[in-house]
Image (tube, helix red, strand yellow):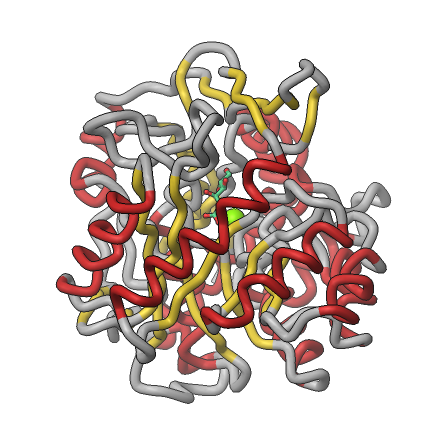
Amino acid sequence: MKITGARLIITSPDRNFITLRIDTDEGIYGLGDGTVNGRELAVASYLTEHVIPCLIGRDPFQTEDIWQYLYRGAYWRRGPVTMAAIAAVDVALWDIKGKALNTPVYNLLGGASRNGCMVYTHANGADIAEAVDSVQKHLAEGYIAVRAQAGVPGIASSYGVPKKGKPYEPAERGLPSESLWSTEKYLRFAPKLFDAVRNAVGEDVHLLHDVHHRLTPIQAARLGKSLEPYDLFWMEDATPAEYQEGFKIIRQHTTTPLAVGEVFNSVWDAHDLVRNQWIDYLRMTVSHGGGITSAKKTADFCDLYQVKTGYHGATDLSPVTMAAALHVGLAVHNFGIQEHMPHTALTDEVFPHAYKFENGYMHPGDAPGLGITIDEELAAKYPYQRAYLPVARLLDGTLTDW
Ligand code: GCO
Ligand code: MG
């Protein structure tokens, strides 16, 4: 089999998605996701100008060799743009391989290790009462794991809280919006939120929380300690993780489990975190971390140190990434949990898919390949629109981590 062509489908049903379609001489095609929220066209250009010309004529079964060719062969390594572009190619090739062999991709990765992938979804509210209601609403929908976020009193537009009447979606069309942040107010507030949520839902529900890179390691240690009575499944992105040793400080002070890595794009970003067991869950997902080829290797490396997967699954990862993440998650031994922030009905219509949610778990389905398609006619009705994530400032105006 030979690759005969590759092209991008850029669409913005409710938000921007960059999808790569690779075609072969046998009429089988594969899809990959190259979306990097707020920087989408950089990946599109990297693919069109530099990667697609190198793919034509290659054997799509050579996922390992093509991965190495694009990673080592570029000389310039890593970074979200490069790794998302490599991932788009790699995921599309695994899709082709599965379709050609008439089997779901998870069978090519070791087969199903479980019946389904436990997922968590997002609950949020302007205040504690609304957040508690939102958690209960998601439990009624069948979720058994829920992330809770609420507006911090005195901080307008807190992280994770939707604008009135809209589902939570961080990227906005137009230029970046600015939000304010106060660590002091947040540290006083977060234990009150989890006290209320835990009391309302009882012991059996998995509760998660995203700090979104806002604290120093010692502040994160304090938060982890103060949340211990509420038995969190994880505390996410407690501190910016470029400095991996920061997690050592958090770890020395708290037994609250730690997750990090949605902004990572290579196993090297997490190398010290994993081999020192400073974290419990690695969130680097398939599409931002170089694809299925590298996700499988990274998961196997984590498995040596009892670190589990907890893949990023926000709406800026397209349904193609959700499908790929579920195939990997079903297969690897050390699956932990999968984030599920459901896409809008329109996005689901643009990307018809075989994966399903039922009673707290998702399954990738048994269609050959990834089990995902794209309705190109519908996609064409929604052209790309520039959008950005917000930026955050401290109360005195200093730019801080959003
Ligand atoms: C999460 C996230 C996201 C990110 C978003 C950025 O845990 O789901 O933190 O909502 O903010 O993916 O593009
Ligand atoms: Mg997060």
